[in-house]
Amino acid sequence: MRVPKQEVEIRMERLAEVCRRRGLKLTHQRTEIFRELAGSLDHPDAETIHQRVHRRIPAVSLDTVYRTLGVLERGGLVRKTEVHSGSARYDANTDRHHHFLCTRCGRVWDVYAQQMDGLPIPESVRVIGTVTSCDVHLRGICVRCAGRGDSKG
Image: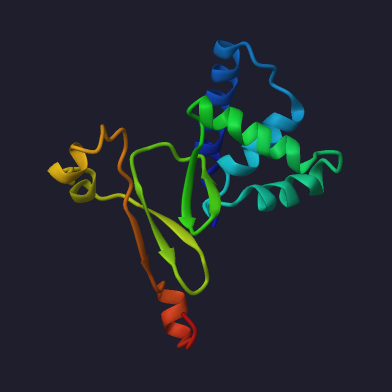
Protein backbone atom coordinates (compact mmCIF):
# COMPACT_ATOMS: atom_id res chain seq x y z
CA MET A 1 0.00 0.00 0.00
CA ARG A 2 1.25 3.46 -0.90
CA VAL A 3 0.56 6.98 0.31
CA PRO A 4 -2.24 8.63 -1.74
CA LYS A 5 -0.88 10.60 -4.71
CA GLN A 6 -2.43 13.86 -3.44
CA GLU A 7 -0.60 13.53 -0.10
CA VAL A 8 2.69 12.80 -1.90
CA GLU A 9 2.26 15.98 -3.94
CA ILE A 10 1.58 18.01 -0.78
CA ARG A 11 4.76 16.61 0.75
CA MET A 12 6.71 17.39 -2.45
CA GLU A 13 5.50 20.99 -2.32
CA ARG A 14 6.74 21.20 1.28
CA LEU A 15 10.14 19.93 0.11
CA ALA A 16 10.38 22.71 -2.48
CA GLU A 17 9.29 25.29 0.10
CA VAL A 18 11.79 24.14 2.73
CA CYS A 19 14.62 24.06 0.19
CA ARG A 20 13.79 27.60 -0.94
CA ARG A 21 13.65 28.87 2.65
CA ARG A 22 16.95 27.25 3.56
CA GLY A 23 18.71 28.20 0.32
CA LEU A 24 19.18 24.54 -0.69
CA LYS A 25 19.26 23.35 -4.28
CA LEU A 26 16.34 21.14 -5.24
CA THR A 27 18.49 18.56 -7.00
CA HIS A 28 17.13 15.61 -8.96
CA GLN A 29 18.66 13.15 -6.48
CA ARG A 30 17.31 15.01 -3.45
CA THR A 31 13.86 15.16 -5.06
CA GLU A 32 13.80 11.44 -5.90
CA ILE A 33 15.06 10.38 -2.46
CA PHE A 34 12.33 12.42 -0.81
CA ARG A 35 9.68 11.26 -3.33
CA GLU A 36 10.50 7.65 -2.48
CA LEU A 37 10.08 8.32 1.21
CA ALA A 38 7.03 10.57 0.76
CA GLY A 39 5.20 7.78 -1.06
CA SER A 40 6.15 5.02 1.32
CA LEU A 41 4.21 3.67 4.28
CA ASP A 42 6.79 1.09 5.31
CA HIS A 43 9.25 3.36 7.15
CA PRO A 44 12.30 2.23 5.12
CA ASP A 45 15.89 2.46 6.27
CA ALA A 46 18.54 4.31 4.26
CA GLU A 47 19.74 1.17 2.49
CA THR A 48 16.21 0.32 1.31
CA ILE A 49 15.67 3.88 0.08
CA HIS A 50 19.00 3.67 -1.77
CA GLN A 51 18.03 0.40 -3.46
CA ARG A 52 14.68 1.81 -4.62
CA VAL A 53 16.07 5.12 -5.86
CA HIS A 54 19.07 3.38 -7.47
CA ARG A 55 16.66 1.62 -9.87
CA ARG A 56 15.67 5.03 -11.26
CA ILE A 57 18.97 6.85 -10.77
CA PRO A 58 21.87 4.38 -11.01
CA ALA A 59 24.41 7.11 -10.13
CA VAL A 60 22.92 7.81 -6.68
CA SER A 61 25.24 6.71 -3.88
CA LEU A 62 24.37 5.42 -0.45
CA ASP A 63 26.35 8.34 0.98
CA THR A 64 24.11 10.77 -0.92
CA VAL A 65 21.04 9.05 0.52
CA TYR A 66 22.39 9.34 4.08
CA ARG A 67 23.38 12.99 3.63
CA THR A 68 20.02 13.83 2.04
CA LEU A 69 18.11 12.12 4.86
CA GLY A 70 20.07 14.23 7.35
CA VAL A 71 19.15 17.42 5.46
CA LEU A 72 15.50 16.36 5.26
CA GLU A 73 15.41 15.53 8.97
CA ARG A 74 16.97 18.86 9.97
CA GLY A 75 14.44 20.59 7.71
CA GLY A 76 11.54 18.90 9.51
CA LEU A 77 10.45 16.98 6.40
CA VAL A 78 11.15 13.50 7.76
CA ARG A 79 11.32 11.85 11.15
CA LYS A 80 13.97 9.33 12.05
CA THR A 81 12.69 6.58 14.29
CA GLU A 82 14.54 3.63 15.72
CA VAL A 83 11.81 1.04 16.07
CA HIS A 84 14.29 -1.80 15.53
CA SER A 85 17.34 -1.99 17.73
CA GLY A 86 20.11 -0.15 15.95
CA SER A 87 18.19 0.34 12.71
CA ALA A 88 17.17 3.91 11.88
CA ARG A 89 13.98 4.05 9.82
CA TYR A 90 12.58 7.14 8.13
CA ASP A 91 9.07 8.51 7.92
CA ALA A 92 7.82 11.42 5.79
CA ASN A 93 4.65 11.57 7.89
CA THR A 94 5.50 14.39 10.29
CA ASP A 95 2.02 14.52 11.85
CA ARG A 96 1.87 13.61 15.53
CA HIS A 97 1.73 9.81 15.68
CA HIS A 98 3.28 6.69 17.19
CA HIS A 99 4.33 3.33 15.74
CA PHE A 100 3.38 -0.34 15.90
CA LEU A 101 6.18 -2.79 15.06
CA CYS A 102 5.49 -6.42 14.19
CA THR A 103 8.24 -8.38 15.91
CA ARG A 104 7.90 -11.19 13.38
CA CYS A 105 7.92 -9.53 9.96
CA GLY A 106 9.40 -6.17 10.96
CA ARG A 107 6.70 -4.04 9.33
CA VAL A 108 5.91 -0.70 10.93
CA TRP A 109 2.54 1.06 11.01
CA ASP A 110 1.58 4.57 12.02
CA VAL A 111 -0.70 4.73 15.05
CA TYR A 112 -2.82 7.77 15.90
CA ALA A 113 -4.00 7.87 19.50
CA GLN A 114 -4.70 11.00 21.50
CA GLN A 115 -4.47 8.94 24.69
CA MET A 116 -0.79 8.30 23.94
CA ASP A 117 -0.18 11.90 22.84
CA GLY A 118 -1.11 13.12 26.29
CA LEU A 119 0.88 10.69 28.42
CA PRO A 120 2.16 12.55 31.47
CA ILE A 121 5.92 12.76 31.89
CA PRO A 122 6.83 11.18 35.24
CA GLU A 123 8.49 13.41 37.81
CA SER A 124 11.42 10.97 37.91
CA VAL A 125 12.15 11.87 34.28
CA ARG A 126 11.67 15.61 34.79
CA VAL A 127 14.48 15.70 37.35
CA ILE A 128 16.80 14.19 34.73
CA GLY A 129 16.11 16.83 32.10
CA THR A 130 13.65 18.48 29.75
CA VAL A 131 11.66 16.19 27.47
CA THR A 132 11.39 17.62 23.94
CA SER A 133 9.38 14.79 22.40
CA CYS A 134 7.78 11.52 23.37
CA ASP A 135 6.99 8.76 20.89
CA VAL A 136 5.37 5.48 21.83
CA HIS A 137 6.57 2.33 20.07
CA LEU A 138 4.16 -0.56 20.39
CA ARG A 139 5.58 -4.02 19.66
CA GLY A 140 3.58 -7.13 18.91
CA ILE A 141 2.43 -9.52 16.22
CA CYS A 142 0.52 -8.10 13.24
CA VAL A 143 -2.72 -9.70 12.07
CA ARG A 144 -1.06 -11.10 8.94
CA CYS A 145 1.69 -12.88 10.92
CA ALA A 146 -0.74 -14.08 13.60
CA GLY A 147 -2.95 -15.55 10.86
CA ARG A 148 -0.02 -17.49 9.43
CA GLY A 149 0.65 -19.06 12.81
CA ASP A 150 4.40 -18.51 12.50
CA SER A 151 6.22 -20.02 15.46
CA LYS A 152 9.16 -17.57 15.43
CA GLY A 153 9.15 -14.29 17.37
